[in-house]
Length: 397
Ligand SMILES: Cc1ncc(COP(=O)(O)O)c(C=O)c1O
Image 1 (cartoon, rainbow, N blue to C red):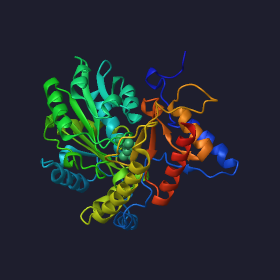
Image 2 (cartoon, rainbow, N blue to C red):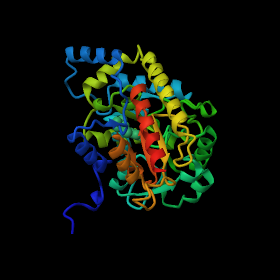
Image 3 (cartoon, protein in one colour):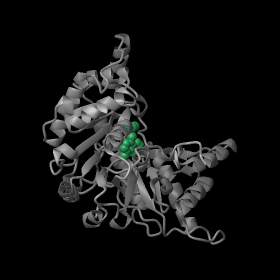
Image 4 (cartoon, rainbow, N blue to C red):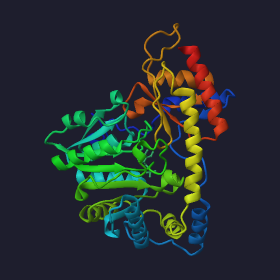
């Protein structure tokens, strides 16, 4: 019998450790790896934020702050959300957290009990079901593969039971690069209202949308019941601040009060220097940074479309937002000598060994037939990697 609790049973830390072990061996034998597995931008954070952090260091900012964030930062975030969503938000509806991850975990602890079910479209970011389980509830994975990773709302409706408590919506989506259509979001909003479900909308990649699917930039949240909507966002992806750990959740003030209590007894406030820097930088903004990254990612995304999207051996939907492309490798075959059907792990290991390009097998996202590619590197590096992937596919088809 395990000495650990049931809630950590099966909990894993490393997403792609098998790949990392192979990569390390290759590096030790003198080969250099192109790593397209990262879930973060390649550039430094905007200068306005870095300058503000230096300033914050000079003026102390060393004490505890309010548990769920500096009041000014919460007001600023509420104002930003009001502009983005066309709905009015107040500071008492915002909690600043150590990244979106803590925001999501606080939500899970506040809302989910044993016996509750939480619907998660799948493939999914690894952490969503892990946190639901840590809270003692049951993740219900909703397979989106046959709907090209979009939400087929009538099938989704069939997954709802009397135990369903919430649905997790992540758009732009990690790992598939999908942006949900406004129409399906409206349908999900109506469904959630009909069944009294919480909707957790993770918009961490919301600044980077390329396809202009229905002109979507930020999703219209007005179709959700305001008392049951939780918007989660982060500075990690938007301004390349993964290491500073700063995110937030916006929702009903009663839930924010519970989150304050949870955070009080767990981590206390998020990093004070990061908060001070963001407070100072927000009035100036970083529109030039966002535009630059969006242009770079958009051009990289076009390279993916040109090189991978028309193929029949791997199916790659046009990335619509975020910075991931997703390869459906179920029809890919390994060289005849190895035989057997392809799976994501084999695809990634083989690609890594032959071409030294590292991707993430979809097993990490609940999909043994998918592979995630991060298109954040410089164009030349991405171009070189795509040529290697195409060469690999042509040789192993
Ligand atoms: C969909 C999604 N949500 C949340 C996060 C966590 O972001 P943060 O660094 O703000 O905790 C990630 C990180 O990869 C993500 O992909």
